[in-house]
Image (cartoon, rainbow over all chains, first blue to last red; front, side, top):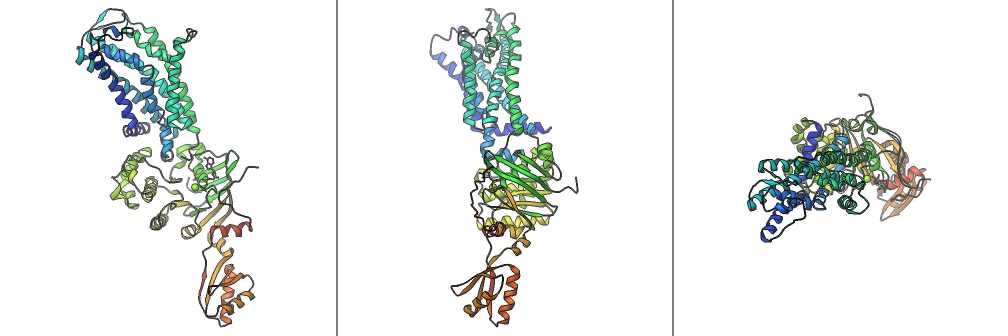
Length: 271
Length: 314
Ligand SMILES: Nc1ncnc2c1ncn2[C@@H]1O[C@H](COP(=O)(O)OP(=O)(O)O)[C@@H](O)[C@H]1O
Ligand SMILES: [Mg+2]
């Protein structure tokens, strides 16, 4: 195992030892369940959101609808909760000096943290997706899905589209995680970083709905939460997907590079 | 890299805004030294050690460990070096053993094989499975030493390892340091306790307000410092009269039936002969343990010494 892989493993172990990790994971898993239960008890539904009309047709539609609702602040909050804490907590506990006086370069320690935060982000999205499909299928069965173009796709194909959608949805979330990690490194304050990253996410959403922002709307982080719509068209529309990939790459790499440089040089003193 | 000095700093400076925490420190620690870094609270000991360990960047000057600068060579400069600043910190939700396993993985994985051995050295083996969150301060301090020993260091940097321990804990910690020194590990330890450094160290640097005011063998310094002494004699008044006639014996006073005075070692030796010649029997002639403050008075010629520093950059 390489040094970074060993550090990554311990970073995961640290996350698994913290309550906030389970809080985030639990929230991601419980939301689709609540969603299904409420829709079982109520008539009517979220008709004006993508796939909302078909939510009682197949369990496959459930995670897509939840993706929409959780993009505003649910997933950003759950992501920020961990990413904003991942450096600041070590500073607060004084353990940063402990691990930085071993044989690993600061860059390696940083890489381990980035990988751990990315893993967590991916897991919360896929956990929601999995629970959503299972809960929805228990309620309404695992049936073919109506695409955004109005055509039916088989359940198996629908599942593949869901996985692709979850993957592309992880990118803008990773952008928020990267921003949280930057704040965590710079402020060394967990609460400030969590709130700051959430504010960043909300700002990106807000700019997307204000009038006059049409010209740069396609390049806002918030917009990329809708990139999966491209997969749900028949035939698939790759433009939003491709754009999400490079736009999110910028939103991920810029804060990460800044955080990396700060982490390399920063004084580690005091608690 | 053999032949390079374990520690060598040149003109080391660390500024925090207007405070100069470390102000032009030149240190040399030689192989085999048990080196005392002595100074009151706020003198700049921890800040110096942080720079040595590469945790903070010097404002100016350089720090080298076995010839390698942590600022330039990063973690590689810590090869063969281990230690901690302020209290050692661990992951409280992990056991002592798990913490060491993690730290071994942050070094080279084969150092995992040494975990039981180092736990044995610091006598923590039977508590190693418990969460560090439940450890006493003394146990964490010992785990800090264990974590350092895991690196098979040739140089140990220990920042006030006995501070905050109860008397028994302090004794155990000093005993441990002594044993490690016998194992040919070069040790640099900071302390604000003169007698601790006196007990453990062969050489010292004394730091005050960020500046080194003395560096060398502690014995020589103590010998040159006027120390307080107490004489118990059958006839204190006559003893006092003899004291008053001796050059180099000062501040003579009789209190509670004992004679007190201050003198350097040479004058005390002369005094004892004079007392004998005057046929004054004495039952005790004991030096009072000089405090760090008294040492400073000797070094700085009576300049007032404030504890919490407010040295301001000019
Ligand atoms: N991170 C910091 N920020 C600002 N001032 C600091 C910092 N660290 C230390 N100082 C100041 O530097 C001086 C030296 O502190 P320190 O090295 O901790 O002393 P010691 O370890 O000898 O007690 C003190 O005045 C302290 O307040
Ligand atoms: Mg200190």
